[in-house]
Length: 305
Ligand code: GDP
Ligand code: MG
Image (cartoon, rainbow, N blue to C red):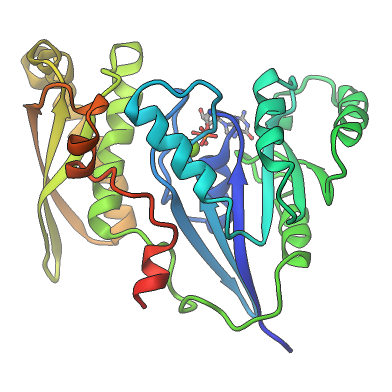
């Protein structure tokens, strides 16, 4: 049989479940998730090869109409650039309500010629599924979607149907990645993002907007991975928030991140964390680049190979 392979853009406003969907489709966690909007800051590829079909999913930061801050502009740019070379788009919305922001996102997609599959997510949250019928009818009137599929990214409901629809849209061409490759992102990136996820979840409302994580040292030894990570905040007053009383919070961040990383790397992990201050980085293009928010080159791993 002919091989099929292609890029699948996962698009939607913040918090609709894009990263949760990617992780569930891959069966492995590569993209961090949380209740907070703007958790995903980078474009990230997830590769899934099933026999002759290779899905190259592109998770993106949530699109939002208000630009503003340099970091926000970076995230919008990363999301919109990711659309240019995809073969099909999965447009994610929330089953409980169609938002104005969804209309704004759809407007960004309208001029594209690739098929758009509408995935109506979080159906597990609906108390009465008959509410879906008018929702489906209204959605169909908005745009001629290739398919409309209600799903639960969290429980996995209807994800097989979604993948079937996606695979119908993939072009016949040889696979672009080795069958055992899971992502284009480095182990260092996964480590930094895992620490950021734990901070995002544990700090809740107290989370400094501009917090970011870099990796100082990464040594992959036969039986252990040794990682030193730096947590960057913008003001020294934010340091104690991250560290917590008696260092409790930072300790908890380290412990929970280590558990996830040991699963990902499938070996023991030694994780050391520091908190440092670098003022004004989130609105300064140069600092953004230094901290890894560089040009959002589309598919770097692909180009290098
Ligand atoms: P993103 O910003 O679009 O990437 O959204 P995330 O994947 O980070 O998810 C945002 C929040 O929605 C998280 O708390 C997820 O656990 C939750 N979530 C995602 N998909 C579902 C779903 O199908 N059902 C339920 N109940 N929650 C979901
Ligand atoms: Mg996300």
